[in-house]
Structures are given as structure tokens and as C-alpha cells.
Image (cartoon, rainbow, N blue to C red; front, side, top):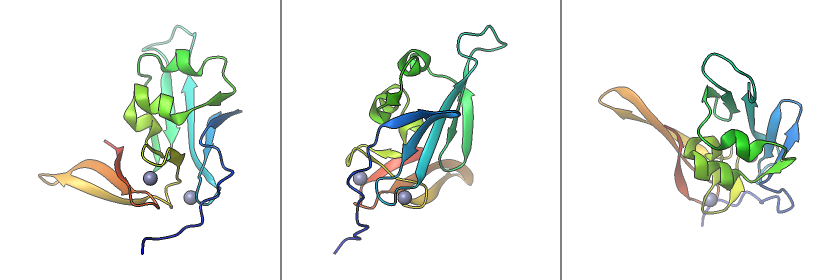
Length: 134
Ligand SMILES: [Zn+2]
Ligand SMILES: [Zn+2]
């Protein structure tokens, strides 16, 4: 018997545009699973636009090619499209379930490579494993 977390079936995996970027809801418990925002799109700044992902923690960096174009002018975004561009930015969405899970609903663990942080992997409530942070 696997865990049954009572999937909230009416929760869409699509992120919805909010004031501070796109918000993605957890399909298992309904809380905010992740927020993805892009800063500096269309501006001439030091090293181009940057992203900020809040999921397991706060993660930011230079946007991967195509992300600004993908998010531009959209009110909703499919996290699988984001994951297709850059796996880590859509990691909250289980590619097997095609549903989002929050940091609490993913069972996470850290893997080390010769004593140094290598990556964070996780298992979704339906038992699928994937890389969450690399
Ligand atoms: Zn959850
Ligand atoms: Zn899954």
C-alpha cells in the first residue's frame, strides 16, 4: 500500500500570474507550491534578466534562453513547458503525474558527491522520483 494523500483533483498545474510572478498550487494539499518570477526583462541591465524561483528555498540566476519569451504576455503557464526549457525551474511539477507538489508533499533528500552538496532529489506522493535541485 502506497501513501494516499487525497489528491485535490481540481487544482490545475498551470501557474497563474500574480503580482510577484507566476504562482503554482500543490495538487496534493492545495497550498502555494512554487513561485517563479523574472526580473529585468526588456531592460538593459548588467547581465540580462534574472529569474527567482521559490520552491525548496530561494533560487535565482540568469534566465535560460527562451524563458522571457515563454512567460511574456501570458496569464497562465504550464510548468512542463518551463521544465522543458530548464528542468530545475519546473522541478516542483512531477513529470510522471504532470502535477505540482509543494516542498512538504515531496519527500526530499540531499545527495552528496565526495562530501559536497550534489543535488536534492525527491519522491512525489505517488512514488515517482525526480531531481528537484541540481
Ligand atoms: Zn502540498
Ligand atoms: Zn508523480
